[in-house]
Image (tube, rainbow, N blue to C red; front, side, top):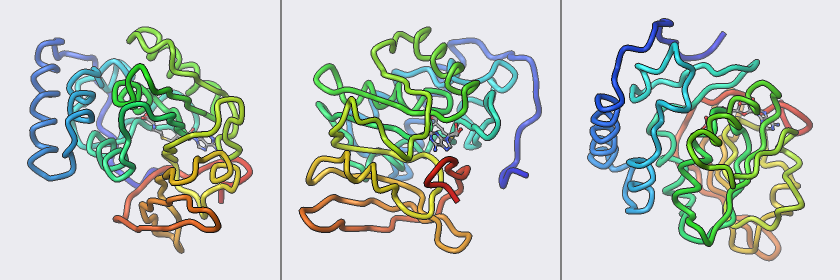
Length: 231
Ligand code: SAH
C-alpha cells in the first residue's frame, strides 16, 4: 500500500494555458512558504511543464501537492514542493555535475538540467525498465535529450560520468550508498531521505577529506530504494 492518497484516474480536461497559470501560482506559493528561495530554481520551475511528465490520466492533478503514480512497479513523480525542498539545501547551481538516483518521470532531471545550465551536466539512474523508458520519452519530447539516463541500480552510482558535485537520492535508504560518496567531489553534497527506524529523515551529507558532515532537515515520505543498498 502507498502511504499517501492517490487521485482518481480521469481523462485530461485542462488546457495548456490553464496549466501554465497553475504552474505560476504554484511557484508563487512555494516562494511564500519559504521553500523556494533561489532565482535559478524558480526560473527552472517556471519553465519546465510538469504536466508533460505525468501519465495522461493524472495530468489535471499536475500542480496539486500529491505524488502521482507512474508506469513501473514502485515509481511516483514526487509532489511539486519536494523539488525545491531537495535542490535548495543541496545548493544546486550553475555548472554543477549532478546525479539523480531514481529518475521516475524525468521531471526532477529536467528541472536540474535548467538549474545547472550549459556548463553543467545531468545524469539520472532508474532501476525499473518501464519507468526508465517513460522518463526517456518525456525528456526527449520536452527537449532534454542531453540528460544522460542510465537503467540500473543507482546505489552503485555511474562511474563513467563521475565525479559529481551534487547528488539527489529520491528514494528512501538506510544509509547513503558508499559508491555515491566515492563518486562525489570533495566539498560536494548528497541529499537523501535516510531511514531511521521507520521514519525518513531528509539529510544533507557533505563530503570532507576524512569524514562526512550531516544535517537533518525534516521528515519526508518516499518510496524505498531497491537494489544492493536498499532495505
Ligand atoms: N525523481 C523522480 C521521482 C522518483 S520516485 C521524479 O522527479 O519523478 C523514486 C524512483 O526511484 C522510482 O522510480 C523507483 O523505481 C526508483 N528507484 C528505486 N530504487 C532505485 C535504485 N536502486 N536505483 C535507481 N532507481 C531506483
